[in-house]
Length: 245
Image (cartoon, rainbow, N blue to C red; front, side, top):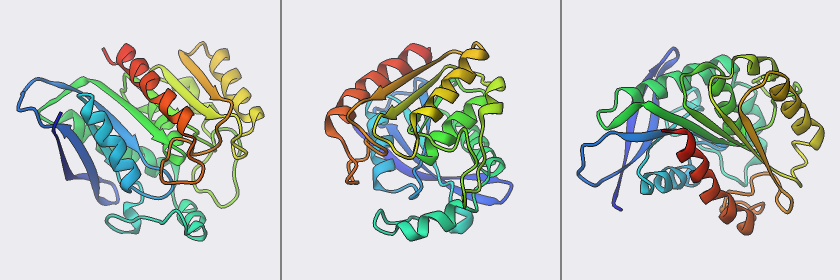
């Protein structure tokens, strides 16, 4: 399937925000499912854009908002420049993430080819946190969090704060995907999230890949674990198809 890749602009409380959009280029005017794709701590880079394109190949309209837009348009951090990551993350707050997510969601709702009643979200690393947070506050049909950390404990030099208390407001089914070898999200944190969601009787699933670590889905990073990445993709699509009806 041919796809069309463009940049759009959404209005946030802190000014305009660029949003990368990938959509099927089939010429059909039928309404499509849509998904917000939330970035890692490195920006809406090639990896995130390729994920959007993969969703577009499956018939989705995918939108990746630039959560770092307050640092400049198309702001990215190289995977080799880890020293730049923490100072940037220290400036990102829960309220900013929600403001950006809300603006990007509205952009999809207003898109002429989007079925506004069938919008989901997925995110990776800090984007996994953003997807889970958005699932508590936006009218999403489903949300997927890949190795989203920071949900349980306050972390030094990180601007966004734990969201276990937000789970009381979870508005849609939530899928949490982890790597067993992810040292940044220990089993105790995974168990705390699971216990909280169970206590609230929320709809959720947890998938843990025993041979994978943090960022195992990113083909541009040394942590990429091809067997787990290849297994989780079709399963994630099937899970989303089940809930984005």
